[in-house]
Amino acid sequence: MAINILTEVKTSYTFLSKVETRIADLLLRDPQAFIGLTITELSERAAVSQGSINNFSRKLCGGGFAKLKLEIAACLPLTNDVPFTAVDPAQSIKTAMEVKSRDIVSAFRNTLELNDESTLQRVVNLIARAKKIEICGVLTSGSIAQSLCIQLISLGISASYISEPLISAVSASMLGNEGLIIAISSSGRTKEVLEIVELAKQSGVPVVCLTANKYSPLAELSDEVLLASAGHQTVSDRMSEIRASQFLLIDTLCAYLRSTVDTSGREQYYRLQQILDSHSVTD
Image (cartoon, rainbow, N blue to C red; front, side):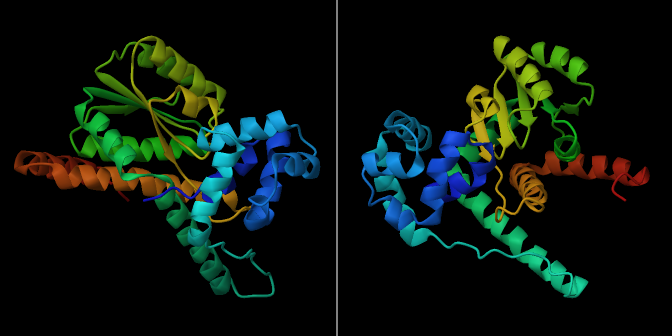
């Protein structure tokens, strides 16, 4: 599946610098007009230097402004912008649910587009091969980390989620190259998560991250990057849509892993489910 560069810009918009935002605004406002601009014209309209435009281009596509315009042109036929929607208090709550459902479906579609088959397969392989997995995340990312941990344990995979960042950092540094860190941070800039990942990398531990910011320090540190997207860019709904997309990603990984287990693995899965059910963990 081809990656739609416009979707990438929308997903990471909140995390761009002020200079990058000025360029992105012109791009998202009218992609067709954007690709018709020279670098001099774009520099004048966005009030940024040509060097900033080239840096922006390299960040997005690994090449110069000309390559960026080619990639934008290639994805224009694929673009299907979701119109701005907001809950109207004059409407019913049922209508609000319908609106929210559409936005989450849009977020799921964007997330599907941003994550290619080869990346997903490499992540699954890392999980399957790891002797020990540690998952880290704080606040809302912590709830996603806990959910992933429970699902992996139910598959018989040795996984842990430690909510105390200092203990988690120490534990991560001791994993070794046969372990795996799965780091979850929407912004990719959460200090506690970055500290854990930095210590893990120093010890040769491979890292998979789940983020909404492709250009974040966390993404740069990680061996594999999974991207969660929002459906649109409204301030109030963006983070909840990213959270839903993160759950989609972890549920997809675990569903695929479940499909690959043999008979003994399935028996182990059911035994673990009986233990969890007996304690009402799934309530």
